[in-house]
Length: 266
Image 1 (spheres, rainbow, N blue to C red):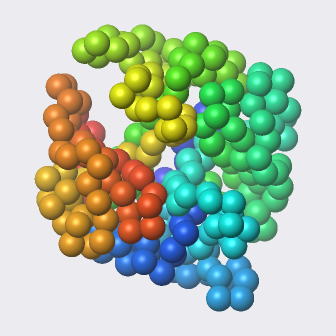
Image 2 (tube, rainbow, N blue to C red):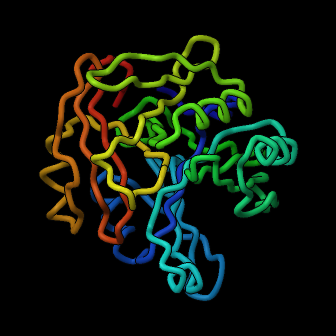
């Protein structure tokens, strides 16, 4: 798909890795996904690294701050959702039961953002674009492709996002569970997976980012050689594709998807 220059409000527009070990995470991702990178200084020996495909921004990463390490915060990917007005959405999110974690604040030369914890405890960011709208390539290999919320309180989470963002919730039977598709004008923008007992009590609610790949099996095979781990091996989902869940060398978890929908280009 051609380069994009804007994001539709209510859709995911950016992915950002907060890493406890930026120095090992950066080569892992750039080699796994054949990304280029641009290290932009944001402090002494600290960088905001733009991750690129064909020199277009598709995601970013940075070194976790020492106070975050001291607080035992684990490496994690943070997903951003495009909105027209961050400040009004932040107020609405609080009214609907979310907590403000950081912001709203300006990101000079880029836009305005707020990080929230939704009523189920999952972290997500809202982004009001100015100079930087987010990922500049979509529906291609090695870029963010799908976003899935896993939560213990399906009803509360569904009500929160439908009211905050105007998403429509569609219930889809999937084996022994009911999967929720969140749509805008009939087009899926994300999904919700109920957290069952097999997740255990210590796993928090979270948004999972899936990156589109050409070969799920090849990525799974290569991951340990680059210092990562395979959490869930390559697995088929009927009518959707083949996926796996991986962990980078700094401990951040993400997923990959080999879609069978014919919607991904090289």
